[in-house]
Amino acid sequence: MFKDFGFKLVVIDGLLGKETSFGKALEELKASTEDAYEWGTYTCIPEMVRFVKELELTDADLAQVTSLTFDGGSRIYFYLMPDWDGESDEFDVKSVEDCALLPNLREVEYIAMCDEALMDELRSKGIAVL
Image (cartoon, rainbow, N blue to C red; front, side, top):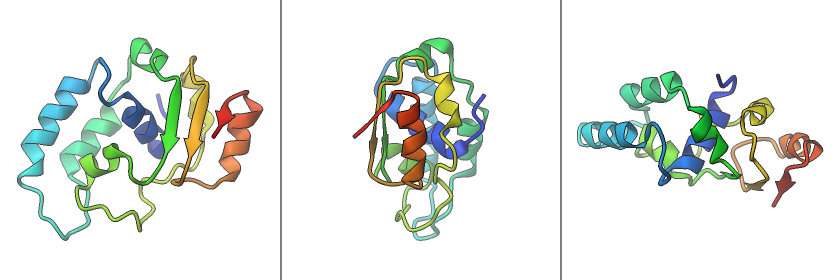
C-alpha cells in the first residue's frame, strides 16, 4: 500500500487518537513491549516495526487524514524506538508519492523528517504547506 515507510509513519501518527481500524491493537502492542525495552540502545522494537510495516490502513482510516505533521517529535517514532533522539534517519520521509492514498489531505505542517524540496511536490498537488 505505502511505498515510503517514513510517510506511512507520518500518516499513522496523524491518525493516533482517532477511531481507526488499528488503534486498539497498536496501543495493546505498545503496552506489551514498552516494559521490556532496553533503554540506551537506540534500537527499534522489532514487533512494533513489523506491526507497522504489515499494517493495512482501511479506506475509512485514509479518509480521516486531512492534515499531516512532519516533525521529529511525533509520537509514532517513540512507539517504535522509545529512546529515539532524532539524530538518526531511519524514519525520514524520502517520497511523498503516497499522498495519493489520502483523498482528503488538505494541509501539512513541515518541521523536519524530510528534505524541504518534497514540500514543493505537495504544493503542486494543491496541498497547503504550513
